[in-house]
Image (cartoon, rainbow over the protein chains, first blue to last red):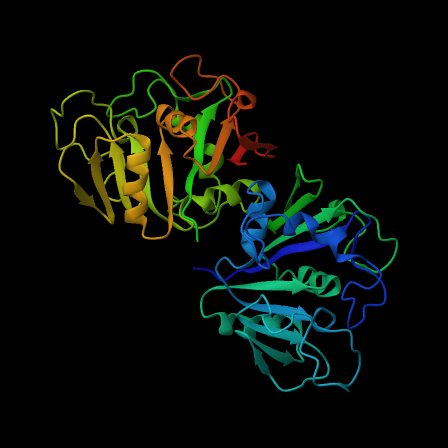
Length: 214
Length: 214
């Protein structure tokens, strides 16, 4: 089986931002309210962070389910791991996810400032100074035949997309405008030279955009 | 985890028929051309019968993928297993699927005419004279904690739906009219008292209908 690089549940505002301005240790999405972007996913039965039974089993549920399916490594940019920039001043920072990060696989954090790997509740974070192609090679080795998830944020997704390394990409556009922040795209139609693109409106109000390699 | 009864990829014409008239040993869908109903699924990367690499990875692919996910038993009506009616005259009949049926789990065939179980390429067929509730109990035991697929045909799906035993149901309506045959419904909107219903048009031309228990 071919190993794929897959992006899932990337959440973007109607005006194209994947996160707001000025993220901090308590506000991973900066000025944006994460609920505005993520409530469609939190309402589904298959949402990885769901702690209670219940949840919808309609279209959106099919997308949240993809997060863990046949995935055994993730690549993310440093901005998804934490708000710090430059050399690490606080190595006690272990991400935004508490003691049980939802990944439960090796995670490769791309950064110019490497630090020692550490494990937390089934997830091991590795810090890698590498370009997209080299990072993908490392993550595929770690995934041992299964697929690799591209976790974001927006600039990391753009870099891998422009390098032609993404096999499938799912972006969910929420009906909210952020005005400023970290931009993924100007418009979904302008994204993805050399990729198929489908736009699927959900009854929940989000629009799912699917891209896959031609 | 709750064990669910799930119907997937049930294929229906725009005028509500799941199969045509007069099925035979060489024409499981009777006068209907199965390609008219199933080509959307056959085009996807995850179609269980796919023998070559490739295939689309858009919306439709998310649905075909559900066929095997967390399923470890199937229930089907006798009409899905074969064209014979009444007492078995030909026990050499082993279904329409050749030496490698796509199920690869226990399959419970509901019939008033039981015959001995047999195994074929990873699938074991059992023949059961039982109502929907009893059949579901048997299939859940066999699935050992995983979910049970309801395979069809139309009258079997209706019987389980009307008994309130289905947890989730996915029906794909193809843009073709059959005029006569085995009817699932008059209209998707009239189906499913006590169920949520979402209608999701696919760029491929089929419309996916999703039902789940309130």
